[in-house]
Length: 98
Image (tube, rainbow, N blue to C red; front, side, top):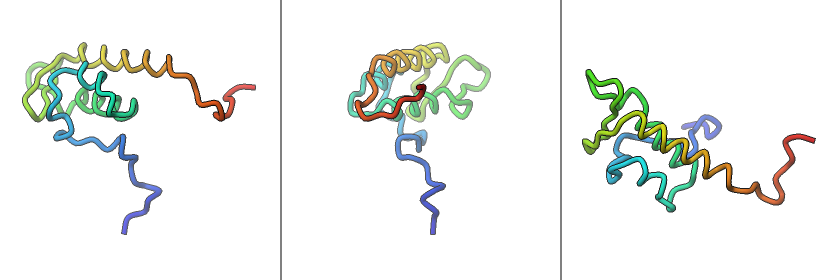
């Protein structure tokens, strides 16, 4: 029996197969059916060394064989940062600084 305290959030649990169907990082950024944290997790996973192309450290390849540059993935993550900065916090969110 697993302990729920140690389970990963569904948004953060990413496998290589989750990238199938995406042909460019901008498609993940534009996928409104995903939460921002899920988009970030997918991009970060694609950027990870597990998807590195042997002999080409600046490239990453998805399970579907889609190859993109590290720069494209980092640019997509920056775009998500800009999107999250423009989202106002919920009205009932506690103040971080007094």
